[in-house]
Image (cartoon, rainbow, N blue to C red; front, side, top):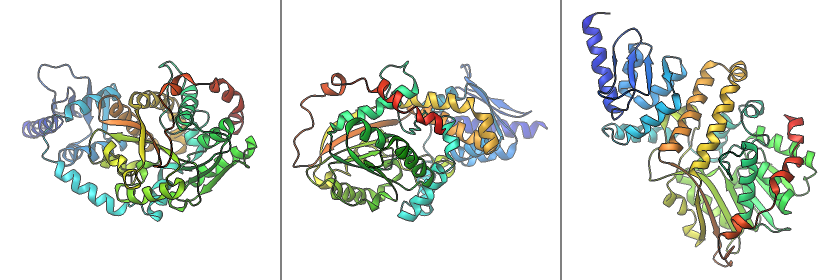
Length: 420
């Protein structure tokens, strides 16, 4: 490698480092130039395979980094999560010259990742129908793929996911004999928990065929088919009247353009006398969601700010009675997921390939970093219709009116191991 090419590489690396906000990292071209901020000890080294990778990072850092890491053209030497955390911190002060490009490219993605009924099926299928055996490798026993609730930081993931379901049920003050509709039910754990532990009847909607198939197996295995109906259909197909509306981890897939439609579905379901809960990933202020994540992991996804999500409730005069932010609980959840995923990487590689493993490692590690130090939040909103009395006088019942549900449920879900 001649002096001029090495000098040119060093110049480009410096431009890239500047674009990151001078993050405390070392950037290097394999066998060539390297740069790092003056006066700091880099937390990790990012090694670029060749000049094509270097040029890609200069043109479109976000998407090119993710794609090059997937392809094995970027190697991270050091703590991967720490690297991503430092990048998040530094990017807050980075030059904003390319933000217009990110917004424009995101608009283009919107055109072919729409959240119409047919578009949603395509988007959901590409992520949630990867195979139940894949998710069984690194999720908890009941396959909950949403933020857990850790009564203590030392709680196991299984304990925390059961505690999350009970936290949701107690917020809603579910009563025996009530009817619940759930929009987006995953593998059915929450619907089964509500019916089993609180005596309610549930209709749960989901477009993922793999998830619905397993949820139906579980309902039959528990003898809950008379109280839980799993329907493989879009949330827009919800009909009938219910006491309670629940959505856990689905709002991220609705899309801003469909919030008014979502509002209509909620009101059609519970009217002015019902109550509901929305559990979703949010952010501090409006911003475009990662284009790499939308391209490779979550097509059609949108992460709303809290005010944007509240606009779903405003047109129907719903009263917001409780808002909780479980950000650090999601960080802890992701710690467990990432650790289990890394332990299972050989099995995942056999199922798919090493490129898939690197993509999902980046997704999980990047999400963990974003919840630790970025602007991602996890909101739970409880709301009631205009004609309903408040759910509780104070928030004390959420923390004092508990029951030993974790141990009881642990015994009742042993069939999950047999079906895994």
